[in-house]
Length: 433
Ligand code: ADP
Image 1 (tube, rainbow, N blue to C red):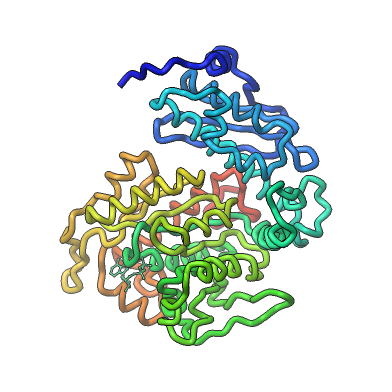
Image 2 (tube, helix red, strand yellow; image 1 turned 90 degrees about the vertical axis):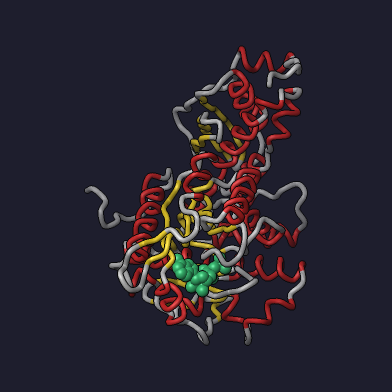
């Protein structure tokens, strides 16, 4: 529906005389994001002493896109990278004097792309500081040294500690679901093991405080993490580094007595106190839903590459996953793709796959929301047996429909990581020379 809203003089000026069109000859952070409307935006950032010295953008979108991209670059100039990362859709709209509702998504795309370019800079500068904590490193532009205006001493120290851990991790993926019981942990475990089998250094962090099932799924019940110097060391299993809240509960039901602030404290502690060392990829099995717990995970791991959203074919679960995708978009977290679990049933007798629930809901919804569909995993009683036995499907039933489906999803994620602007530090099997 056409809007009767009049464009403000500032918005008209920015649309007709686009500011700071890119690319830049030299840049320290870059990102390209495609929005749900199909428009693609790119940002390039030049960072000097932790501040944005130059910002440029490009878009294949309309005048509103040009206005939003240009205003976002103007807002970023001179700000610290941390401040730039906090620029929101509303800031861009306010600075433009508003926009008609039907084109306000251009401001969201600009804010998300700017945040992704800032995150790219932070990850790259973190990689440069590999081997030494950010708080101590000599990188002049290291953003962790830049204190936010609204931060107390304790908060700044805590953030430095968190970022000094995360900056040694090349890629971070969050596994999310709109509700529990859809197979989020099963996907996290099999994805992590697939990436280890492909040769990556992988960590798996289970902060699903409602039901930390990963120790059982990996045969690690009763394992006890060791304490290092001021940190907790992950438990290692066949090359995979694992940390789970479950390792610290004497009984799984302990989790239910946690109250709100305590849950947040536990999540934060897990992110900042685990010594992963250098990793190619950290997979985080997040709490389900779109409430405070997954929100605090996403905010604490603001540099994450993106989220893998797990759903099942039924209508209710796909409605939940829509909320998860909206949730990611609001937070500027890219959605790497959707996995449809329990997609058809594999008969244990004849091996045929039957669609006992509606199938294809996840794929359809992914298409509608313009996010990649990573694949469907059939329902197979061997998944439960494998989980209970502590052996992931990609190890014990690799040559079955379910094993092949997990493997295919692992390869899709690996391809996404390979083509990411943050390249893996060493050659992977299957890389061309
Ligand atoms: P969530 O992490 O979303 O709560 P889980 O991964 O713990 O879900 O899975 C819930 C239950 O469903 C587990 O018992 C698991 O073994 C089972 N399950 C998950 N995926 C499948 C599947 N494709 N086929 C059969 N059972 C499955």
